Length: 246
Image (cartoon, rainbow, N blue to C red; front, side, top):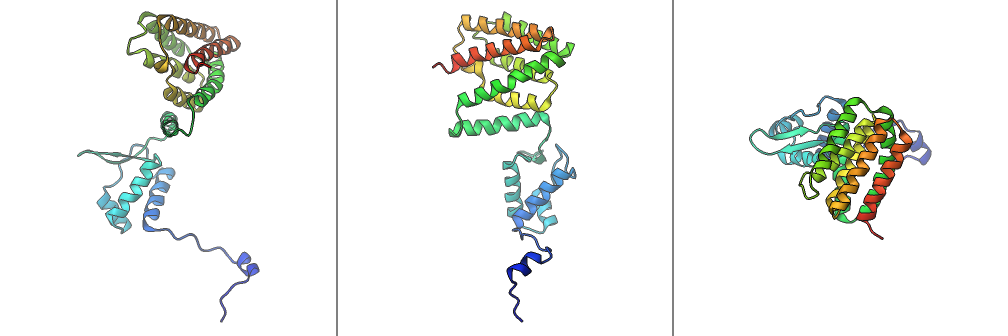
């Protein structure tokens, strides 16, 4: 009997088949499905490679290749040492910012993206972030911002804590916005561009930067979104001018 199907017969045939996967892909997709379904929770340690090989009835090499692929996809972390192993990576709004930052770093390192492009997107996101912070900030947010600015005001421009304080300042504004996704993107963009790290921080530039930070905090404290937007635009424009002079 001729088993060849016509196009019409093929199109109307009941779909019962699916793509046949290689063993490594089957292991990878099963573990990924377990992570996404919650069967494997964030931070949970996976069974040892030998045990996974036994469960899947495949070689340890196959398991190792599957785990390597899942590590590349940022779904698991490989921890060396006696207490190490493969752990499900935490998937939340905090890790989102880290994953985004790592991806940006790779693209910038490879030359696929330009630093000025990233800085521009950062400005596009920090403006609404600052407006939202003025609307939604809490007293705790405000106290944190004031504490950071006070430390910035009292240290010298060559203090090694300057870049960290600048990152904390912008991260605190992003958190105060109340939008965790927006905060994650701002975190990633700021960590990768690290504007203060690349600036030639003369005492004059450092003093101007702190004054701009104080102006931003004042607008947020007064719950004035328009003033907050104007202050952050002035500040980011100043940074871009010194980072990417025309």
